[in-house]
Each structure stands twice: as structure tokens, then as C-alpha cells.
Length: 230
Length: 278
Image (cartoon, rainbow over all chains, first blue to last red; front, side):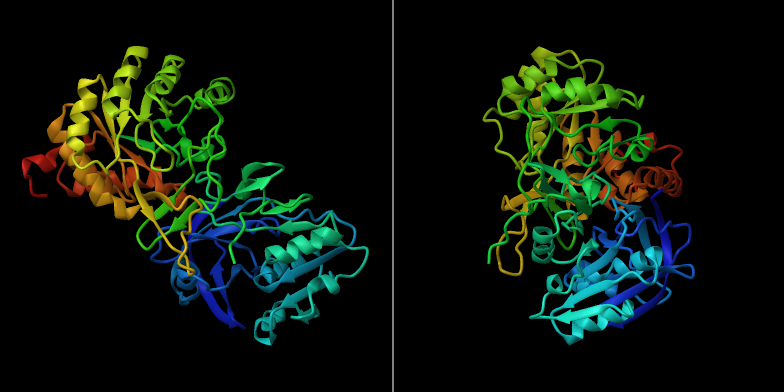
């Protein structure tokens, strides 16, 4: 059941280029891995969506890639600050698979520390990053196989596994080409996260649908995103 | 003091828990034919508001009447149906098909090409097609919104919904429009002073009841638009950030009313016109 609560920030850590923001869990349910939360961006009009990175010891944590004013405002919070957090919302990964492998690219590593804690510490993980600085985020998943550009995660995925993936669109499309049953977590700009704004629509099965309600994890045919001009 | 959602800012079926906090539910705008809406990107946050270019995505009149309206009635809340079209006749045809609702005529969506007729002509055509309560939703971009208000009043409107969004634009890092459509409707806190001025002007210009909206996020802000002349309010952009906003604003409004030395929000309607210092 999604709740919106104002929670205290309990930790802020730099991990490579990313920021791990921990909050007091309160009554918030961590939900299913791959679900997401809308996190208040201080001083901004709209919250921002994040998958849950960690749920442990009474804390929830979100991994922030500060690439715009909203994510920057969240990454700059201090311990003791308070943030409104709403969730869990959306559809997470199906976990009833026989041989899961977690595949993350860049900030797509975010949902997998929590996912592995639910699936079991022995769950294999493959992570790809653009350089060694970004790859510092692999510290969140000890034992993960890490590849760095120009090596691609798709080259390191073990055979005969059930793929749970999160990462940039080209990576997800590449995975889907070889693994049509992969479960992929997509993202789109969204204002609300609960189906009110109709901002996050993507083309799914030929019609525009709200990714917050249909996803973010989708199995099968990929959603069609608008082309981004070069 | 009734609190509604602003049209297009809430899907009742996706978020029934928000509807239960409201005194009535306002639908997304219904057009005669189904509309997929604009291609993404459809939203962009700015420093003090947000832009949207949803493009009146809706299932169309027939599917709305058959599939959606019965489900919306099951909430047991007063229903307001936002009606859109691309000619006065299209608006009126939808009005004629409705019963037991209040009609809000969307005369001002900035994200579609509008009907060529004037607001007053559309209202007059709708008036001839229905005896249901008709509220005209006006654009704050009119140079003299009070003149438009007087015209729709003369054409038979029963009330005003003030205000819709203002057309705005945002560019990305590559200096290209963020929104696929280029421009979109600007809402949120930046719109609030515009909304106050519009409600204030129209309250002076007409005797019509006004549903006030535009950037309201707190009870105090609700009280201000009431003081300008709104006798009901609606929440839009704030719902995206806070699904509990209707309950919170209602509670805060009671506090703000008390702090202002009043006994009821109803007593505050239009008091900004009396020069009363709070």
C-alpha cells in the first residue's frame, strides 16, 4: 500500500558520481524490487521517481544521479533534513523465476542491492559502466561482475538465466534482441507516479500508455519512446 | 467550501483515494472523438511551475458515456464533466448527451488548436442544448478576462472556472523545446498571482459563482483566491506532488480562516474587494 510520509534523512554518501540518500523508513513499505517511490525535490514543484536501492535496518535508500535541478536538490540534502516520500508504486520485477541474473547499466544499478537482498545473496549480478569512476557504484553489490566501456554488459550476461535488467534504453533494447523474455525496467519523465498527470506515456502495444501504471518493469515487447534528436 | 480537482489533473479510476477527499470530481476533457493526445515528451518542470502538453487525451464521447461515466458515478460524488470540441456544435452535442452532472466548458486548452468561434458563441450554443449547470473555463491569457466573463454570462453560463493554464515553453540543454509540441500549459505556483487577478476581475464584472484555481498549494493560498471572489476551489498541479493535498488544504484552510478572524471560509468570499485588512 503506497503511503506518503515526511521522513528524516539519516545518511548521505557519495558513491562514485552518485549519491546514496538514506531515510528513516517510518511506516513506508519497501515494496517489490523494481517498484519506485516519488521523492520530494526540495525547492522544486515536482517530486522525482526513484527505484528503491536498499531497505535495511529501518532505513530506505535511493541512489541519485544528480543530472538536473531536481536530482541535484535531492543529492544536496543533509542528515536531519526531511523529505516527503511516496510509494511504493508501479509494477516491480516478477521474482518467481528459476535462475535470475541482475543486469544493470550505469545508474541502472540502483534497484539491484534491494533486489538481491530479496532474491538471495548468491544471485549473480552483471554491471556495466562508462568508466572506472562510475564503476565505483559496483561497491553496492559485492561480487558483481563489472564491465567497463567499451565492453558491454550484453557480452557478460551468463547463458540460460532469467534476466532482470535496468539501464539506459539502448542497453535494454540490446538485451531484448537476444533475450525476449527479459524483464526490463524503463523510465520516463513523470510528475505524479500514480496515473494522474498522463505525462509519462510511452507507446506500448501500439497505444500511448502511462509507464507509471503499466511499468516501470515490463516484460516482452519494449515500449516505444520518442526519438531524441542527436 | 467545496474543493475539487482541476480538470485533467486526476484519474479517478487510477486514484480513488484522492477522489474520496474531494467534494466533487471533475473529469478530463471529453471530446466527440477519441484522442490519443500528444506524443511525449508531455511534461517539463520549470523553476516555479510545470508545463504540460497532454493534448486532451481522452476515450471520446461514446466510450466516456458508456464505459467511464457509470464508474465515475459509483464514487457517489457530484460529477463535473469537462467538455471540449473543435466547433460550437461539437461542444453542444456532448452537452446534449449528459444528465445529472455539472458541465464545465473547456474554452481554453492551450495544447490543441481551438474552435474558431468565440467563447460566448460556444456557451450560447451549449446553453441551447442543455439545461444542466454550465461553467465556462476561461483562459487567463485574455487581455481583458472580465470582458470574456461578461460575454459568457450574457450567453447563459451559470458560473466561471478560473483559470486554465497559460501557454509557456521550456528549452533543454541543446536549446530545443523540451515538449514534443513545443509549447504547453504552464501551471503551478507561478500561475497563482495570475489566477488571483482573474478571479478578482471577474468577481467585479459578473455575478456568476467562480471556482478558483491556479497554483494553490496551501490553505492560506486557497483563502486568498476565495477572498478574491471564488466560492469553491480546485487543486491541480499540487495533486501530482501530494495526493493528500485535498485533505491537507481543507484542514489548513480552516486554520487560515481562523487566523484571519473569520468563522467560515464562506464568509471570506470576495472580502478582498472590501479592503478588509486581515
